[in-house]
Length: 454
Image: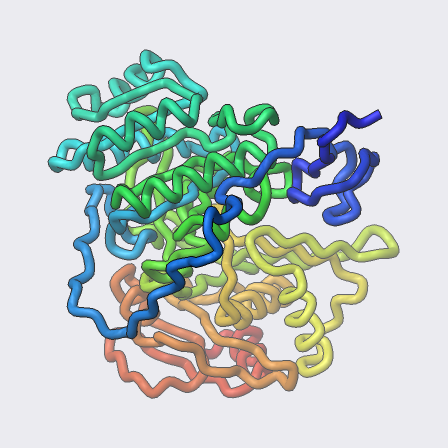
């Protein structure tokens, strides 16, 4: 029987239930409902002492107050994703799989920012101070004036941060903090929501930039209620495929910058290393291009990136052909295959199709349609594309090749890396360093690839 004043909260989505059940009706998770004591939520209104209230004062959009300068931490890729630096008074949530390098990244940010004259506090609830010092020594940051602390009590942390003036405060992680105003255990929905709310209020009232580390669940979502993502100003995800040394920092939400910027890092023995030219990492090192490989000239945020798209088409040994995709949208592949069958006469009904984006990068823009189609046609006809050719363009259901944005930046990046040909829709830009082969329809592209005419 439930205790008086107790509620049952799903630890996956934060839904409140009147009684315990094996499955949450809101998110469908099993064995995620935990009994918690009923307490006032953080920020709940107290009964007013008087019926007279002061009311709300409205202001206009015009203001003479200049924007505060951003805090440049010195980690260029991190500053790029944040929009040019960390904004004072902002709250940032950094999430990622266990072992991907979140603590290493933030220690690098803290160390470089501290060496540039900023006062930085690094609070860890998972590691002892000596462990952090050992990592800093391995990274060459043992002389950085970062102020370390190992604490989990929210009241003590807030009391110290209100007395001291910091520029950046890093909390690793938000799931380890606990507030004595709630009886729920650390990591529960109630505690995560309350502690995150207090840290965000501290950032706004004190003008300090707060970076919170958040664990992720098995499906890749930030552990705890989704309301935490709405509290903060930016949600950054640190991604990395197993078996690859590359790490990609991506912004899923950013109130002070673009949400399509990425930062690329390489994990090594001495920590993370920034990658200034990610195109060189994601491209193959072979001198001759094999059949089924096409180089896609893409755009990630404001940065052009060249990446190799690999395809393999083989006879299916079973009745149902396989469709396996790594680094691209499965639905997008099905659409490209359907257009190739309906408009170009290719038959994939008895063929296994495998598509892979080399280097562990995930592509989201529609401009990769033509590159995927070129790789599929190249594999099906056993005809390799030229070594110095890049491909980009969006495919419509009618088989038309549609124009994409920022074509000039794509060609400039290709020229910088030694590519001299491009297979793309008709372009208005003229770049003398790259010979552009314009195709209006997918049938034209298929004919040129199968006959090796560029």
